[in-house]
Every structure is written in C-alpha cells, then in structure tokens.
Image (cartoon, rainbow, N blue to C red; front, side):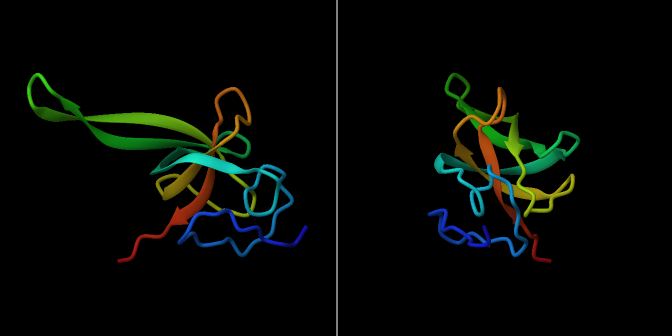
Length: 113
C-alpha cells in the first residue's frame, strides 16, 4: 500500500517515509476523530508507543487565578514518523488501540529558530 490517505486535518505535513503499519492514519486503516492535542515527548521506551506530556492552565474560580497542570498521554507512533525524546508533536484522537492508547501521533512539530 503506497498511497497516502488524506486524514482530513488541514495544514498537516504528510510523512515522506512509507510504512506498512495498519494503525497509521496515513498508510493504514485507522480513522481519526475528536480532539487534536499538542505536547512534548517524554518517553519512547515502549514498542511503537510514546508518552506525551501536556502542560495547561486550569482556572480556580474561588481565587480567580490560574494554576499550571500537566497530564501524560500515551499515543501510538507509526513507523513513518521519527520522534525522539524532548521533541514536540501533534496527536489526534482515534479508537482505542490498547488499554491505555487512544491517540496517534500525526505530526512532528519542527521549531523554527
């Protein structure tokens, strides 16, 4: 399967590398839905899976202030996208792939210096 599918999300850089992964949104059969999030890669130790840390602000109405919070998300990493720890990625929600994985990496965000 050499064709690259349109995943329906605008301004996404399609990977040039071709993979045979069935859970790849570009080359496989995985459909995307729901949320699109952004975060930093914390761990790449699992097989075809990365852990992403997302930092966000949470509003506390009693004190009328924000506090910083963070959450970790496990996401499937297709073979066509190369990611290392410390890089920023964009993930999209999909169906459950395993017990903890319900997101897939769709793009590596390159920092412009």
